[in-house]
Image 1 (cartoon, rainbow, N blue to C red):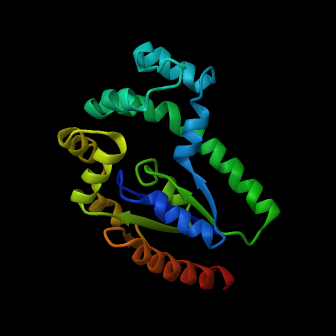
Image 2: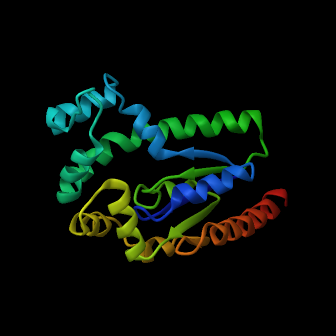
Length: 201
């Protein structure tokens, strides 16, 4: 059984996926895959540097995600270029991992954590879709804390993405992360239980 997990930037997807993992769900994180694929000297790293320029590199040659973010979040065309470079490669890795997990454990529950699950059309391959939702205020605060962004830059990044209200239209379940960690855990446990019931049937 494959579950898609998505939501806006800084909505709390990682927190939710960790809670699912604690319950025995196999988690495949698209962002972690992207980081691995864009390590220095990897083919995808070369492509990105060739297009966006050496100014997005850190001293150790890794991609400075903050600098790359500034470029792609202020120009929609640039964001599309980056997505077209990265997403087909991420999909190959996800499909391979799903296949490996399925061979080892045909009854496994696999959760795919992907920010652009809806936008890339990957949601169509999922058995169920979960959307993580947080208030704009919480998203802005988390982005400012996590990425050291100004209010304006945080707002721009949120605005550049598909509105969460739009994503919710594709959701079978919605998890609200405005409350405490215990509140998030309760929501995850409830959904996990329902998914287990469906899987067993």
